[in-house]
Length: 502
Image 1 (cartoon, one colour):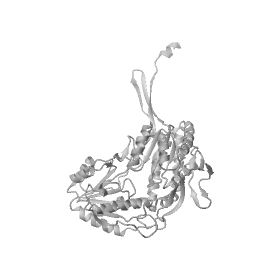
Image 2 (cartoon, rainbow, N blue to C red):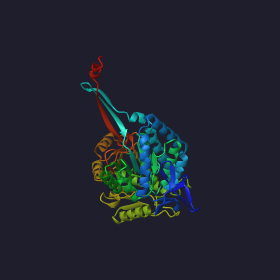
Image 3 (cartoon, rainbow, N blue to C red):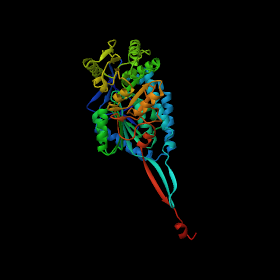
Image 4 (tube, rainbow, N blue to C red):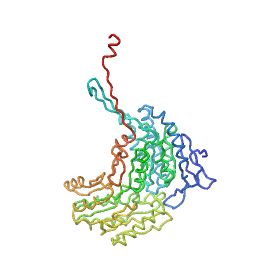
């Protein structure tokens, strides 16, 4: 590895993204490098090292050494670092949002939301002195008092996706570190720049060396983290296929694992819904972040008379969307997808939807206005539950419309979905909303809310094949995941007093 002051210019050609080991930013000597793009322009803006077991080993050693001291640091002192980190994030808010737009392609407004939702988790972690308190029960038995306490578990690691470069890493390492653990972050190799900047700001806030470390790479780095005996817990967010792999391999190697996977989220529109508000909510849910989020609304069920009305309103709204370079056009409503491979994969799914007989209402092609990785916002109608576009996660700006006869059939179709992240209903009927909330089989439910993603105080609680593990990210479940409970039973009687002649 060669020392780096944060960024290193490789002979004037391309920025090399460093890893963080202890307090040192270094550029590792590796055999393979990945490319970081500006998706709006299709231009390479940096190169990222594809780390392996050797780089992970060095990071684990640094984290393990730091754990000895950090785990014994008083909870209020750990909270103080969180407060300082939050101040840094607020101070650099616009810088972080612009960086996300540059390497991810989402609009500046969406990037600001990415940062804001991450800061909310740091704000939650600032309360660690209260969150980690145990319980007491005096006289749990004759002469015996019971006390529980929550203690850190060791070196933890997080593997995060490209779609939320700030929020998802901030789901993980602030809570883990506030609980007294040390952490190794492996951000997506497609968006490493934001993660590096987050770590720089945390160090500037006074975080001790080795408490937070960063490695980069693909499957080799992931498997090295999953298999390393010095890592106690793994947090993951990504596709269901990889989430299952992370869960199986991590558990096989004796680790705690929380692995959030993909989704096929359902939106149901009842005939009594407020169509103006509903249309706005659906547009944001389906096409926000170019559909690249696990809470995106991708299945639309128009019940009865609602179907043709909401279809026509959505088609008109799609026609008004401004698609373009998000780093140059602040009025862009939707940006590109992350890379050319994603664009081609999404277009293949659209072609398959047409071949299966769904009606293509809007979209279905490249946006040819630039060299970037653009896909037109796409709306299908007259699809059936068994079609590829209604069954598989596409992870792009594609909305598929089905037409159930009534709410019972809509719920039945939704519950055939193997995923279990989110489902929403638009209605003015309390009875319909109550039936839906009780009967739909998923972890996050919205009533007249387009994206039912919970705030930081609540767990991000996917079900079924959207989550592998027991304790979810965020909220009290996150605190429980990054700590383990100890119970102390104490008996103090008069024997000592008698031996002393008292």
